Image 1 (cartoon, rainbow, N blue to C red):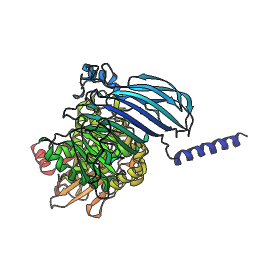
Image 2 (cartoon, rainbow, N blue to C red):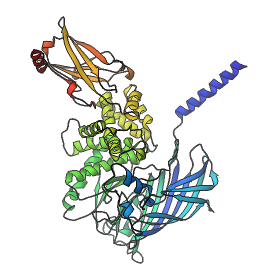
Image 3 (cartoon, rainbow, N blue to C red):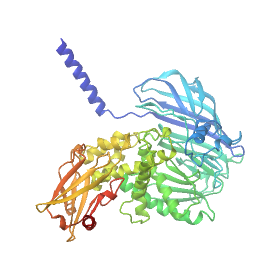
Image 4 (tube, helix red, strand yellow):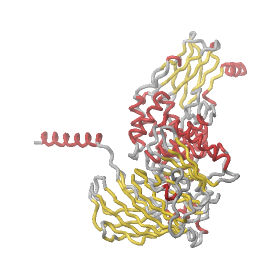
Length: 620
């Protein structure tokens, strides 16, 4: 009886494991219909929102949560207090929120909320709306929420707001009550303190009524271009005049995680077409500070899209908009807000960076709050590669700037593991360098470990397999493992979950019986495979490759690399010795990681120079 029961339990456990391995990760779904009426004199608007929400999770939901981001722009909000008490406040924020007057603050007030036609109880807690459902939402069930709300657009401080430093009227990001994401890790109702975002995949149908002189752009496709005009209408069509001095703009945006729009009466609207790609829209205030560089921007943007599509996976939407606004550069689905009074290099650079977010934030959409480096870091990596090509920079390693940023973090004493939630870093410096620099260097290290020929196809595989699925760090590393045939969990665990550093050096070079024995030492705590370039006095060179045993495999090299693969290095061994069939007197130099693809924090001990070594020995 016990044997039969044990067999049944084992079979049941096996079936669960198999199902868990093969079942595709579920995604919640939402369809928004919104109508707002903007008063450009008071900077307030009234809104109606219908949200059809589908619970694709296996769980029954008794509550839902909405983000009310505008509420952060009020004195004594969590964002205000965080900005005033953190060791190194964001200069754009500082203590500015604490000084806002009643007509300068932001707010979103909920006037009514119904679930399937019946009122629900709710409470506004800072930037989160907590909703007690009148009936639980069962797994697989779809419900409809109807909401009326009003809002005031805050003075431009961070990302969203009115009247930015360059005179743009409205940068409308985080402007509507947005359903929080519920995924395999549960609810993500994080209070807004100025960091990153996570969102439910949704279809947006948005109507914005505003003064007829304003030009709009942002997420989504304009559905009534001939009515609104301003460069959207067909050639030769005279746009409509609106009603009572206002026009209603109608946008549709399918399968996106957010919706941003911007508006200004002085926008110049320019279009460009990416071959076999999206139509591009550029909206900016044309003046002596912008005209020359913004006129050149479309050409570079087209080139960037072509390179990005070919190298990292194809952008899936039919449109992308580059819009002057905001407080720096910020990404949104199908669009970006960037400040526009920049040099050409800066303007192209910020555009390329924010566009690249369309791959890792807009389409893959990893949880930016929890895996901020999977968006910011991957974007920084990709934009550096792209800029090197389209700006003809000629860098052998375009990631050198990101590596330098990581080295500064590693040496600072402020480093925290990249697994830290974005909101909870102790300093902005540690957050920024981890998310951007160390996140980009993560990919640089993988390219070094796997090899370029394997790495880039694997990046495209990752994009294609995980788009619209919110991948996590393990999802990504599994794609890389399958592509390379290597075990890479050790790399992820060291680089993401610790602050351990890479530091290898050449300890000694000794000759015995006409053979040379080279001993390497692992000074840092993080193991890596090594590539040692040996150059001889006759001008020839060879590459010594030492895999890690825990990789369970090795990097492949082209036939012209003249590479010799040595025995694996067990990571617990502090030193490793290999033999060269050459006299030490024939060696001119020896370098660990000559191309500087590995993020070794101390490169001084990576080099053996025979001439200096002999001189040092003689001096002794």
